[in-house]
Image 1: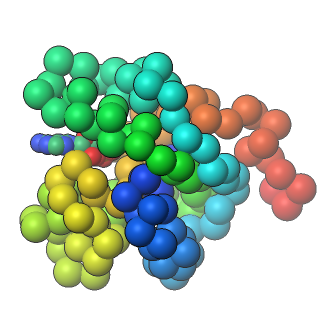
Image 2: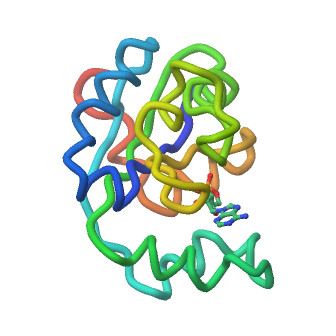
Length: 140
Ligand code: CMP
């Protein structure tokens, strides 16, 4: 099963991308596709459209366009649930010890990593960043 993650601009700018990736690999995920990109405002607003109208939406989109991020397609058994567990709660103060957000996030907004929260959203979010042809790779 596949899911989507994004190493967010705070983690990339803070030189933590490699550590976050190492943590994901240690948790049994295989990287199936990856790219470094800087989101446009329109892309950030579209990606997070489900949060439109929330008080943090504008700030979230400003943060997500503030620098490069690294969207990746990750694969393992039960990928969506395992990734949610590995990243921890949205607010690092509430995240379990050993989770990526506990280890690397700065705040509820600058929280190092995004993960799809359901299989349906994983499909949508993977399609947002990657073409079908990029997901098969030479090693599938
Ligand atoms: P993410 O898992 O990418 O999904 C939505 C993002 O909005 C979340 O991580 C945070 O970066 C941000 N977010 C969610 N809730 C809040 C909040 N209460 N205040 C600020 N940012 C938030």
